[in-house]
Image (cartoon, rainbow, N blue to C red):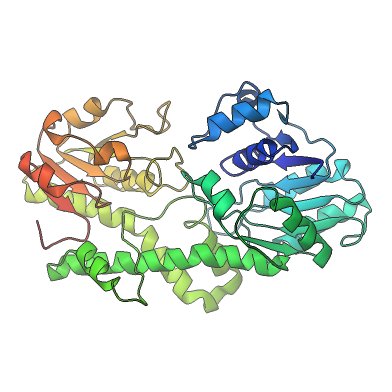
Length: 423
């Protein structure tokens, strides 16, 4: 049985991971640089939204197996789960990883294990973490064990996927890999695959880059379909009946901390050899502008000058409160650049985290000349269009999440991203 764990970072990955270990009987101390986040955890209040998290947090705190503060403490194992964003020039910002590693150095003892969960460019463990960890004076691989085991979960399903998904473990040494495997066997039911740290780093970035490239392909097809009088959603569905084809679906852009970020790690490292990856990033980053321009065309076709847009959805995916790299924010910027007025609404994003946001769906819609759906929340899928009173009955669905027949029967002009067949 693992004696104690110190988790650095209590965000979308670190907190569920800490709670999961605590629920399996491990003593866990969580650390975050945000005092408000720490205070909320101590009081069993959530600062992030995730199904099942509240109940698991309550249990962990009530049983005395989860504590939280802004400073680390001695433990047998240290898990680093801090952000690894990109800079404005799309280069990797690994300062959070470096700072978190440096912060645990004074608390490390001989025989400890340090595991990086953050998704990072290949060679981060080697080039960023190890130079900090050698300051312990311990011999890496003999007295101190280091590994990378990247998270492979998606917001909204984190606990199911923590348990069920296979896990990749890359050790700086074979012993570190084996120790890390034993750690995650606490709750992981999927297969745990062992490799070296750099390969594990590359594998996680590869997984997200594959999806980004596939979505870019779908987004190009969506733009092409609008010139061919085709419904791309129908075409993709039919193509995917082929046993060796799995085309993803288009959308207003790609968001989240992983898919919109990780491919840039390979572009930075690969330079001219990462051309497909780079082009895919540019394609997906262009979709907010394409979405805004299509919104403008819809208004022009309706002979509406200027106009007000009700944007439904600020989160990067359905049924979560995560706005990291959300394409919605970029779509709003592009709409405003076109001179349009925007009012946004998202039932999962509280406290009006965007300047255009209102907590009232009615307020967002009542003045709207067009409703634009950017996130496929269940609340939007289940909307009754007959209860809405916009200025003009026009809706633009970028996620194919609305029942077009229901909206058309309610008198709406229904537009779908990538569909020129059924306008």
